[in-house]
Length: 179
Picture: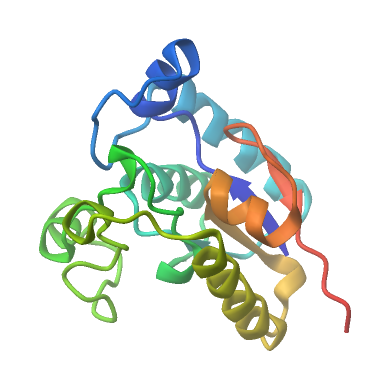
């Protein structure tokens, strides 16, 4: 299974320069992020990827949509692979709005607020919580048929929790399973 960190978002572009949270909830991809998604599609095509899973954050859905269009493959929305909630960019878009923006995708399994609402709760998602999500995802993914043909569009924090690797935007990382 391959993990892809979403392409550069509006948040990433500012944060990389300033190291200050610019206060952009659920940001879109930049033009550079779209280019990174197209580049990732080429790499994934060479690996014979036939299916995508994507986090419900807009930046991941936009990345997955670009890849899916290029490869002509389906996308399934998977909330377990969302980012660790710590910044404004980790405030998600409510499900009814996602349905309007991405009508081709199925969001029926998501609650309206599907992310860890650290703003309302007043506490970030802990490292233990994201590690537990990673464990649940790995356990679920272990049972996927043809998992070597599946790619997952996710985030820095989630990929780090699964693999220990801190990927750059658009970077592809292999998720190993000890069967």
